[in-house]
Image: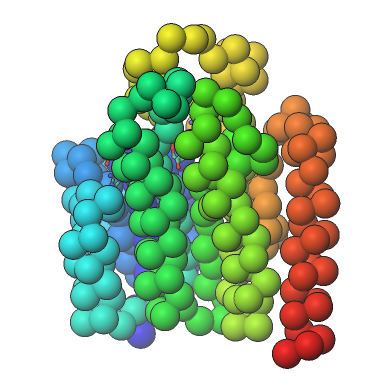
Length: 262
Ligand SMILES: NC(=O)c1ccc[n+]([C@@H]2O[C@H](COP(=O)([O-])OP(=O)(O)OC[C@H]3O[C@@H](n4cnc5c(N)ncnc54)[C@H](OP(=O)(O)O)[C@@H]3O)[C@@H](O)[C@H]2O)c1
């Protein structure tokens, strides 16, 4: 059976960086790269094949479209591979006053950041085995409600909560789930995020990290099977203030109570 990796959002930023690290260091036969921009995927696929000898499957898909998820599902069903790693990095955020911002854009944010991430995770777990893992790209924005980033922070709270709970459910199958929660990272994310914003993101200016820094920590945390990965000391401190450890303890407690009574 073929061992594969799947990375969404592979055309830029964190997804691209993580895809390269997987090609470099993971024992896989094939890497599926997913995003909308085909030319970017072709470029990355070439780089990965030439430098690391890993076969790539390029899937130029809009994950907001249900048909895209169907295509992935059909391909998986016809090939029945073993998914060693799934990385859900496709996502975007927009800043501004939620009641004044375009509703369709905000709905798309929910569809991509939450619905597509859930659906793909749900589809892929059917093709995973002991030793497989899932790396979800959440955000420190998911730790607390953020005015003027209201919908984005809510989508990332969903990713974080879903991933923390799923990690307990999949433990019995030997499948790890890690939620990466970076602070601001210097990627194309802010081109979209700040496009229509009337305010400057001060937090971004003060704490921005390079994609390379975050990708390295993401892989390290994933290999250690950490449930939540928070890169950088400042964001770690922020996560303590915002009660991450209480959330983690609560989810362990909820799991133990469920197991005791079921
Ligand atoms: N940068 C930050 O400060 C930061 C901080 C915390 C968390 N994050 C999260 O990290 C993840 C990656 O973001 P990034 O920083 O790497 O930004 P990025 O460079 O803008 O990457 C976003 C990726 O999502 C893909 N994408 C967007 N819409 C899509 C769609 N409809 N269907 C399929 N793919 C789509 C993009 O590819 P195409 O445009 O080619 O489709 C791109 O590859 C996101 O989930 C983001 O929320 C980012």
